[in-house]
Length: 446
Image (cartoon, rainbow, N blue to C red; front, side, top):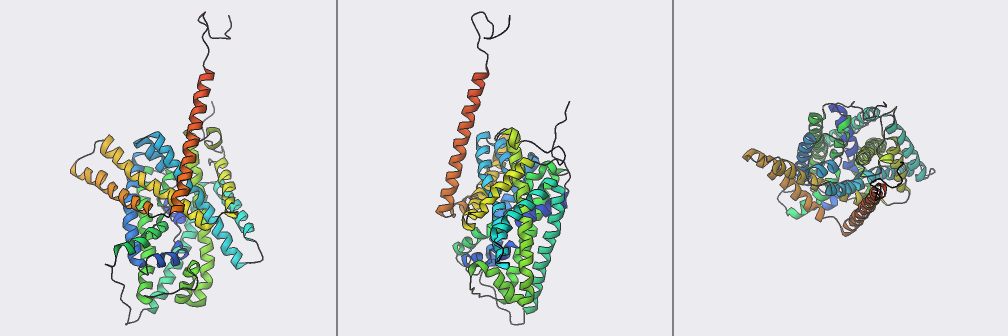
């Protein structure tokens, strides 16, 4: 009898953490610096702190659900098993926006930056080249991807540390005080809603549960380590920058991160910046292809998507090769889509999934499992309610284009589900034998 090919458990805690940090990309601090600074009216430290608080509750909920369901489906699995399969499908469908468009963003920004460095080489050459490399590395295996991610994440951390050292050197006895924290809350919240994008990615490690050793303990620990590490990597440079340069103006908001690096470290540091940023984009793309290919595999294995296509693994590499190829093809949308629209898709998909993961904790632990002691009420009702409230409000802050595009995507998912359900019902009816008057199925042999 032929044995079933399964995902190979090979990842340890540190490898999962590096994969999550690679998806999150610490250098994103600089990538969105101008937009974040403008939305927060210069109060980046306060906005990052508030964003951390908002995301922390959702990270906690992911940790709870990953212990209850240590499989590789992330928010899709949690919602499906704790609330309802149909709602789980819709959450998984929305999550595909986040996961599918993340490698598109990586490829797009990779092409933009390298074309700017080497104008004679068209951006599409870099986009296609990155797609091929990401696909090959992911096919070889997740452990290989994790080891590459570890190296490139440390390069990013080292750069941020050097940036902070330059800032610390610039601190004199006459430092500038920080802006008062208790300014209009709406002002800080506006910045926090944008900055939450910097924390997206911690949830992707739940898609690797079936490839992680002792995942019930490893995944929740990894999630918290990722969130805390990211907070330190964002808060420390923003705090020091705010001390030294309380007021900043930029020539170009999109390249504000580069301008800040040049202001702080001069030509020497800014010359290194682009190289490190390109490496960061590569690792983010690598991790995002891993995540979406695993989500597609689980949805295929559950027959939510065609199982023959999405639910198979390569017998040698134990990786979903077909899914990886599909993701690579879809990522070629980077050739035609705008960065702004891609980010809107990601935000809608991620925040929708975050909201329902918080609700799933309440449905599973508080309602189904009836864990309602005072301590359990706090852990499984109050904390996830706070998380859902934060995320729901952030969803309401998305612009009309993001909500419209997300709504159209969900409508397409509903139509697909109805067609699939109708096809399955038709197939069941046509496959049933017709009983004749003699009591024998029609067409049976005497």
